[in-house]
Image (cartoon, rainbow over all chains, first blue to last red; front, side, top):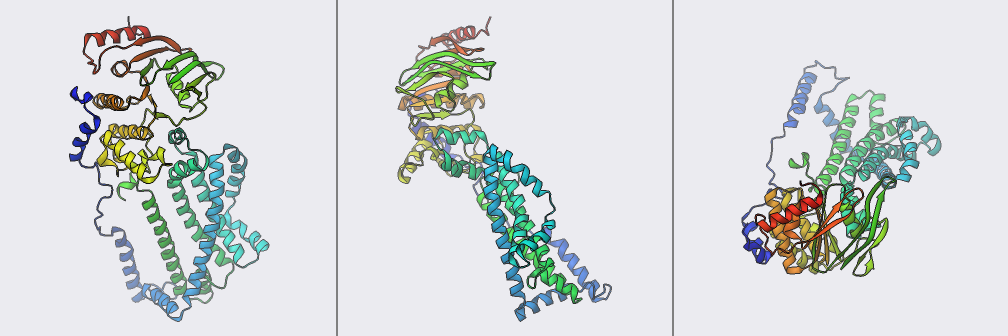
Length: 285
Length: 242
């Protein structure tokens, strides 16, 4: 750098040089299509299963062929029997997830932000967390009856804890130095929460939501097995009672698809919201 | 512009960070605070910024006592402290959110051009090098048009070349805007390149030991005999030279 730089206005000095320089990395790299390597093994296993079932090596009354399972789903869809089951299970998970994550968001934000609230509330919540959640089932049924309320509340309890823990640790982990930047620009209260705490907490919160959703799917099965006359969990019990393994497998497959799809939705949302992250994972986008 | 009156600050019963520090800074003056580590120079700056409360004494900016972060005061931290979820442009506009969008865009574009980052407005902080990130932080401090800019070892994490580049850059901006600059540093050459006045603090308790007026003409050459002689006197004042 020559001494003349000092006397020139910085604008003229500086703008010319970086113009020629490319960005260190393009903000969004073009995504190349990749062979879905993860699909190879499941497909091979399915093919093997189909062959073994058709040749009679597997007893059809215990493990029917995949084609028969798919046929069962198609039949359920054709007769229209499938949709109420599917819809009700989705509605229960949706309601339980909404309820559980809302409560967890309120309490997690509070205990993460305020040390006093943490000292007061967290020990109790951690204690409750260690109760195996299925132990609540008899109590919930006693309190709220066998219908929807007890099921939704049970799912909400399952969703609550991962979201609560994720958010609380996220808020606690917010970089003090970034909070200070906010303070330096005289942000306080809600503005500081919205512009610093919220985005800084988002990664941990989204992980919590994904874990919570996974538990939500687990708990809907428990709730529906305990007592329901509709829902995918009911199909499981129904298949067992009537000795139709294809119905059980169809239900399991539908749970897998629904769980995977909803999680993929949250994962997609996470990627979109966290494009800024400088982490090992973000490179693979 | 800035008056520090009998400032004292104590952390716990044992540690006296600052004791009876008084200092006046004139408009457009560049003052460097130097001292060995633990002399309270960063604490002093943070109290002036309103990020920490004074223990005793008071700080006045334009005659009014400091009670919290002041709109006319900018702060450049040791680290860039860019918010990683905002683009470079959004980071620069962080402190001027109250202005209309057109005004914000004009100001941030101007500030980014001044620090040579016009082409990086849309980049994420993670894509910037250390020097570029600190330049973005300078732009963020400048868009709010502070009268007083406080710098807390702003270039100490950078390599020597980037550091010299940014020092000259800062002087270039100062030559245009003539804000008052108060700089904390432990780099004596940095203090001598930038400052009109170098205040030497001694530790335990932190207090003003000596004040040097640097009357070398700008641009200052680090290799000039006058420069080196000043540096030697500073070293002696700090008690680290034989």
